[in-house]
Length: 342
Image (cartoon, rainbow, N blue to C red; front, top):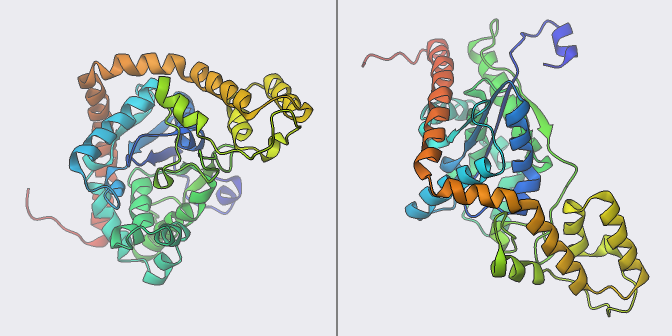
């Protein structure tokens, strides 16, 4: 909790880190630099932390049940292969925690439709042609429930998700005001904006995104990885002429992987001339291969033991549901949602 809040006498909620990622397809470099890398680091450092695979959210776009089940397990494999520590932080599937949906409904009853219609992510997705279904519109409220059902106080997100954290804070404040003005149930969480990377460029130069079909998979290798890297769009400057590295999509990706000295060396080669985009793509290919080599081997080993991965998810879900259950007992008591059945 911020020091100024404590000075004002706000209730002290314990620090709880909460975040998730959507299993709507194969995870790519944008997912890695935008979230996964930091989630893995936080799993090794944080105290109480919950990271989940948001398969309820994925239903806004994914209609293939076999694919959704496969993507969900694949995301868990990716987390664990990249070094996520399930002994220090919880990893689980969102669909194992039905309390999330119950809390989301309560928050929806407090949320003006006009607030949802101002959602930047909603408007952008509709503009890209995604169906304007109610799930897409209310996505931020389900996300608020994802965070608050565990008492989340710190939310690692990309800069483009800042508005969703603001809507989570609104949901917490509205609930507390309506039902617990003297003893707040929910904290108003703070965003932890991830990484300095604003945009990871895709192969076509736009933001890397599954919806654009311009991705390079985290665990792509061999011919598949080479094909993706070699398809990165460049301009038509001849090899012998100098080039501006800061205006090139290939170098933007190299910058993410290369150590400072190598990055400067490649940038100097761009500016000197005689260094073609083919050379740059070969350097990028080598950097990606080296960066993920160990993780690829770990992922292969984990994929051969899927029951072990399911056990990790089950253990994480058990811990998460105990926390969510305790909070929902308080919520039901405050709202008058009495239960008469067993």
